[in-house]
Image 1 (cartoon, rainbow, N blue to C red):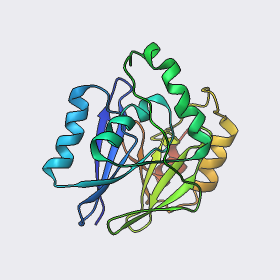
Image 2 (cartoon, rainbow, N blue to C red; image 1 turned 120 degrees about the vertical axis):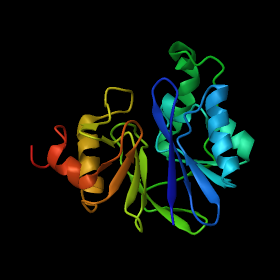
Image 3 (cartoon, rainbow, N blue to C red; image 1 turned 30 degrees about the vertical axis):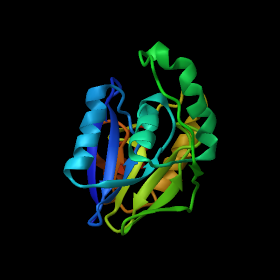
Image 4 (cartoon, rainbow, N blue to C red; image 1 turned 180 degrees about the vertical axis):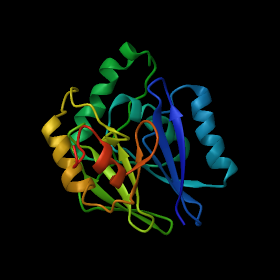
Length: 215
């Protein structure tokens, strides 16, 4: 059975997720941990639960989602999976990290490219990769069909959507991604976003003022 642990890290209150199952293998999604206490919080959870990280996943590569990439790769000996179109986004972080107060940011590199239709496997768990650009050019989401749980990054929030005013963002593309890739999922699919509380596809179809189908 898939279990999901969420952490809110860094001043952006970015949601970092650890997904694990009965095999004790786990994946880390969007590690936003930057300071020592955040890194220890993540490491202590993994150690205290006897988990073995096997993969590092980025939904996209904006600064708040990748601050802990290098630490996780080094500390756990795992490799990074992300979309090729977000590689320039990842490389750009070093140029502006200090402007956001993250002096000492460590660069990381993508080891494996993932795209629509790929399946990320760990333990006895399989995650389907959905390509959902608009907030970032290479944004992906990870869907666990068995439990109807979606790791959505910064695409869809509770009664909100990801911003599109950053480089590589596009509002129309984001709305298209939501309608064609997310709103085609079952209404009872639970969405674990990159910021804030969880929501469901059905709730957002009705109540989201930006992309709802009943506006």
